[in-house]
Image 1 (cartoon, rainbow, N blue to C red):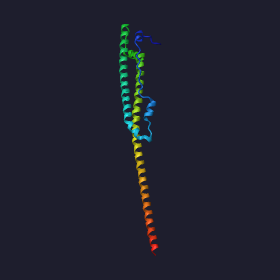
Image 2 (cartoon, one colour):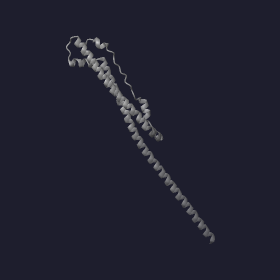
Image 3 (cartoon, rainbow, N blue to C red):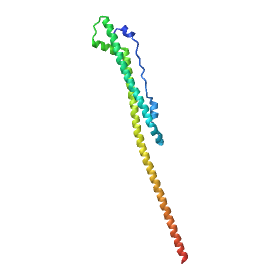
Image 4 (cartoon, one colour):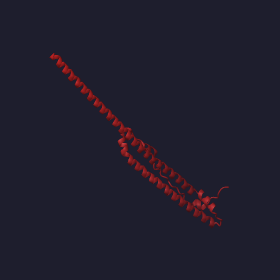
Length: 188
C-alpha cells in the first residue's frame, strides 16, 4: 500500500544543508609528516598545527550543533503543517501516525543525512587532533633519542681526544727517554 502524496507537504521547500568538510586527508597527511633530519622545524610547527586543527574541530562541532538545531526545527515545522492539514481535512490524528509521517518526510530525511555527515566530519577532525597529540609525543621521544645520540657522540669524541692526548704524552715521554739514553750513551 503506497502512501498518498501530501500536496501541502510536497509544496514545502526542500531543505538542503551542505555539510562542510573541514579536514583534507592529503593536507593532514603532509602536516603530520616530519623528518628526523629536521626535528627543530617539526617541533616549531607542532603548536601552530595543533592549534589549527583544534580550531577546525571547534568548527566541526559547531556544525553538528547547527545541523541538530535545523533538524529539530524542520521536524517541528513538518509536524505542525501535517497536523494542520490532517485536522483541516477532518481526519483523526494520532501521535504515532504523525511521528511516523514526520520521520519519513523528505526534508527531515535530508536533515538527518546532513546530521550524519556532520558527525562524520566531526569524528574525522577529532581523529586529526588526536593524531597531532601522538605526533607531539613522537617528536618529544625523537628529541630525547637525538639528544642521547649527541651525548654519545660527544662522549666518544671526548674519549678519542683523551686517548689521543695520552698517546701524544706517551710518545713525548718515549722521545725524552730515548733522548736521555742517547745522551748517556754519548757520555760513556
